[in-house]
Structure formats: structure tokens, C-alpha cells
Image 1: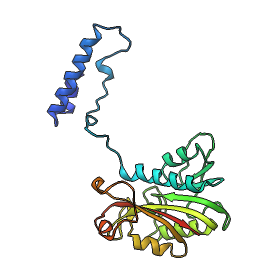
Image 2: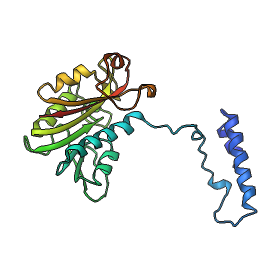
Image 3: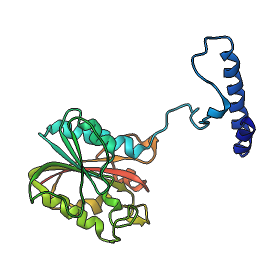
Image 4: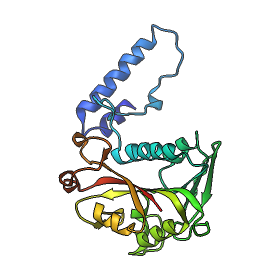
Length: 246
């Protein structure tokens, strides 16, 4: 089995050598202590990319749920509706606010205070002006590109945004997050990238409460409220977090 490891990691001899060396050390230690686990070659599970000086993370998907959770907590609704955002958000938010999560591909997620239900962003299951608190984050940029087996539609994002605005009650809150850059483009079939100006124009009939940027370069910070034009111009794939009120 160790020979297989060598072959598998032949592109990185140093990684394979270190892995094998560490296995042998641990195996030797096993002889002089109370054996509490089976340590066998058949159970090898190499993880060779984790010995880093810092813990890495996806900046978009760690920071934007953290931003949104703080915003929702600040106005503390009786219930929050989330449309197809990352499951980390609805799972954590449901610890202190009842949440209904809707997705084109519903998640088999079971937690107190959380309902996971099927829902189509292009035909939301709510009457007009009936939802007081709603989020749709890192989602609209995908609609209509076929990535999730949905029908192809160049203007799918516009139709999705129209639905979000349709169901939002007067005085209601909408949290909206999309990739943000210095120019609008489609990275087919992954996602669209928007500019700050293009997002604001799409929601011109709502009132912007807060705009926060997650810069793509960690050297520029984490959550940057009201970023400068210079910082926005640096972005190719940043993340724009918008809090709107109707």
C-alpha cells in the first residue's frame, strides 16, 4: 500500500516521503502505548495540503453569511425567508430566528426552527408584497446559465430579481449578494459578474441601506463598508453585499 502511495504522489516526491515517514513514526509509537485504534495501511487517507501556516477559506462564502447574519439580527424579524443561499447561512440563522429555506434542488436538512422547502426563484410561492425579510445570496448570478440543469435564459437573473421585488412587502428587507467586478460579464457556465452600478440600477426602485464589499485580495480587508472607487476598480471577482429596503 505504501508503494501505491509513492506512485500516486510521484508528482510530489517530498509530500509522499513525508507522509510515509510520518506513518512509520506513528506505527512505531503504537508499539509502546495502549493500542486504542487500528492503524493499518489499508486505511490510509492521505491529506497532504493542510499543513499550512494559516487556515485557508473561501472569502466569498465565509464573509457574506457572516455579513448577512449580522444584518438580519440587527432588525430581528419574526421570520426570515432565504432563497437558495449557502446552507451555512440558514442553518446558523435558524438558531435564533425561524427560517424557511427554498431551493430549486431542496436540501434534506433537519434542524429546529428551519424548514427546507422546494421553490423556484422564477416563480416564488408567495403572494405579492407578503415577505418582510428575504435573502438571495450568491444565487442570482447562476440563474439561466444551465449549470444546475435549469432552462437557459440570458435574462434569467432579471426575472429572478423581479420575483424578489414582487414578494417583498412595503418596508421589507432584502439581502442580495453577487460576484462583483470592474466590468459586467458572463463566465459561462459558472456565473455572471456584476458591477456596483449595474446592481444599483437593477434595484433602483428600492432604497439601499448598506453596501459592503468582500475584496478578492485578503490584503484589502474582510468586510469593507462603502468601499472606495479605487478599491472597486481593482476587483475582477470580488463579492458585493447589498441590503435594500422597499
